[in-house]
Amino acid sequence: MSKYIIKGGNKIEGKLNIRGAKNAILPIMAATILNESVSIIHNVPDISDVHFMIKILESIGCKVSYSDGTLIVDSSFADQVEIEECYVRKMRSSIIIMGAMIGRFDYTKISYPGGCAIGSRPIDLHLKALKELGIRIEEDEGFIKCYKDNLEGNIINFEFPSVGATENAILAAVKATGITKIYNAAREPEIEDLQNFLNKMGAKVKGAGTNYIEIEGVRKLRKVEHDVIPDRIAIGTYMIASALTSGKLEVDNVVISHMEPISDKLRSAGCEIEYKNGGLLLKPPSKIKSIDLVRTSPHPGFPTDMQAQLMTFMTLSDGISVFHETIFENRFMHCAELSRLGANIKYITENICMIKGVEKLRSAKVKSPDLRGGAALVLAALTIPQETEISNIYHIERGYENIENILRGLGADVLKIEEI
Ligand code: UD1
Image (cartoon, rainbow, N blue to C red; front, top):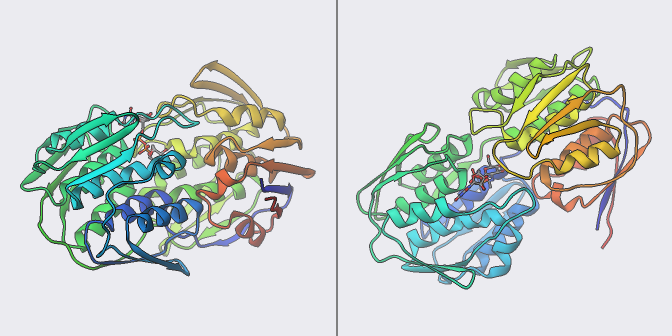
């Protein structure tokens, strides 16, 4: 189990250039199965979730190479239709491979992903969407067997705008006959990036980024080259690192509309944010202002993936902030660890908590509870002049490329201790 030792107190400031979004590259990697050809993808982050997805693609017969942020997948000879259970168990989001698999093959079998730390995360909406498209599904001893009796466009109405279910529906519909209409689709920017990738390979998808998506099925797809959008969550995390430590941060490459739900909250906390030349400049607040209410919601609301990091920010604010997590039922595991570091957090209900800002946090040994909760602990440690030890950092490495080197480059004193 590796860990970080962070001696905080330094300003986190300078220039930042962040690679592509984890939540965009994973569905795009699934989509490479569809073209039976080569996909060249640039700006791919070097994170463990990407390496994991590479293993899945290789396990079905794809040839994959990855170096210097460029991923090349040749899916021409993919021929294995069963996804090994260990993959889906280890990375829940690998379920997004299901739509692409059944788009390409007549049959596929994948293990039921089960719950995960942040919530039970059922896949009923994914299965409903595939069934609407004519896929016959048998659930059998923890496995899902999908049969492509008749893949035909249809109307899909989501009762909740699930990101993964929207992506699975799009991936399956790309090669269906006729037109698929998705209502109440998730609007996350990463879905728009998936659409752009698919259209470059010859698919006909429109509307992603809005709550209505239309897909006209096509028979054949082709070779594709694509650049992944910047990771709004990683950028938001580093913005808070600077804001917490009175540093100025310049980010090279951002999409303003992707950043706004996050920037809006940081402005409420007293940050100044200026967009210029395709990038962003953050100036820290002289005093961190509390935010009355932070409620997570689907895009363009405030993202659940930034909830834990913003909570760390509020632990040092000048007043009381209330956090309401509406997307996942168990996404407050970082609260207990932040409390160990001296934060004043009280639960109101399971998914509402109140944070009263304190003058300063104090060092302790803490454990990353999950990916974003782990990032929240790193942020807290950056404010503490003594050494803070954070274990279970494999969670953090799932989604943050090279976080210790990036932070060091911005002035932090971070040591990674590798333990096998
Ligand atoms: C994606 C993101 C994750 C982010 C989340 C919400 C990826 C790889 N992961 O996860 O980082 O936190 O969106 O923005 O893109 N639900 C159901 N039934 C379903 C599907 C989902 O009840 O069939 C529920 C989930 O349990 C959860 C909520 O819907 O409570 C949101 O889940 P969803 O939008 O599907 O998130 P993911 O795609 O899993």
